[in-house]
Image 1 (spheres, rainbow, N blue to C red):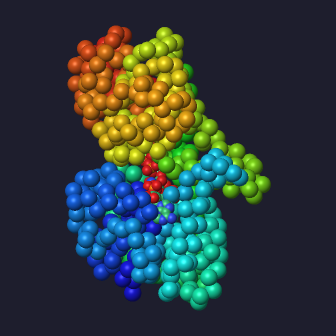
Image 2: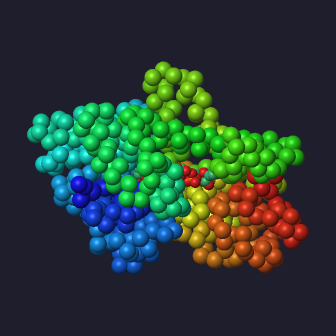
Image 3: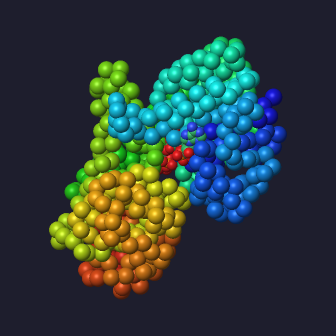
Length: 462
Ligand code: NAD
Ligand code: UGA
């Protein structure tokens, strides 16, 4: 019987996932640990609206279970020692140094976790890979765990997470599937069953899929590659639509009605962002190359190349349309997050579009309902394109969308926040420089209505 679970990593995955496990398994004590003291403090904030992650439905669950059977702590060793199941949910970013720089996943945080578990564990443990990892990582984790020679037995499971930000709680409560990969030995199968029993508290048996470890690890990279590939495919078509008079929304609808293709994930956009699609595909490309599978690597790399092109195309189009210069012009950005309903900005297209336009000496006015000025500046500074003071001088942030657009030469929609659709566009038009341009990087506004008001509207693929 599992009574204690620990999760290392209180991030976008660890936090929401463990909150839902705690809510659905009242008899299991769930402790989420992290080295980041500030983050843990924020998770423990009395006001659950101040928890570090904005995710619809999450504050309510945290209010319900925190202090009952859900705990956030920096006492990593204690939580590891007590738990029967340990989830590793730490970040696995693209390497920024050494061999595989810019492509391979950086597994240093994973390895640190494995070493910490090996050091602390005094009783047998099930160690679960929740982070997205290169295929065959379980082998490395096992080798570290088994190196202590103190007789403690470890089983490694792969249980990748498929939630999407902005809908994390809905995705966790009603997952399309739960994937658990484990060893084919009797002990391995027992460990799989222990984790199946946890999920069975709220997920129907036919949705819980068990496989070998390698299939599970590789399925996660494959799922993200397929999802991103759909976006790059429709974005490639968006450029062709713009040249030919076809409308990408109509094309997406027409192809999506083919049940073999399906309607989801066919929204043309300024380019996909988020912490995972690019990182995971680069990792897949790296793995393929390391096995000498160059055609496989090139095939998937094209998804990233297309996405880069889509982001560049968007900023070039703004410059071209504004008479080939944006120097000293005000460009109002509506949205900075990589998608709606999240405060996450990792790899957001907004960062790259802003960077391009600042290179052209534009002034960027930004409004995002959930992203702070501090975050916006740190995103730009991370690119190291110019001195931080220059970014500071090029970016003005607002907490009011109408003030953001005042006297702007153009508006760029970077995130599909619902509230943008409901603005008084007539009022915004009046306050802008003329001609007033809108570059709708999400195709969320009504082109005909805006043109009627007087805007010059440019969407993606329309
Ligand atoms: P994150 O950066 O939000 O959180 C990771 C946390 O781990 C950080 O708070 C960090 O301080 C902590 N950490 C790192 N090393 C540690 C250590 N040794 N001990 C204790 N804490 C440590 O990352 P995330 O977005 O939650 O992603 C985690 C993993 O899940 C990644 O592999 C990612 O690819 C995968 N994933 C993410 C999503 C998503 O939507 N963000 C979805 C599915 C899978
Ligand atoms: C994605 C996957 O959807 C999750 O299943 C996966 O667990 C997660 O990555 C992960 O491994 O991290 P996420 O990045 O949170 O989730 O959000 P998505 O909804 O997939 O959106 C990713 C990006 O693609 C966003 O910038 C979004 O705006 C863009 N997008 C999405 C489009 O441009 N068009 C679409 O049709 C869909």
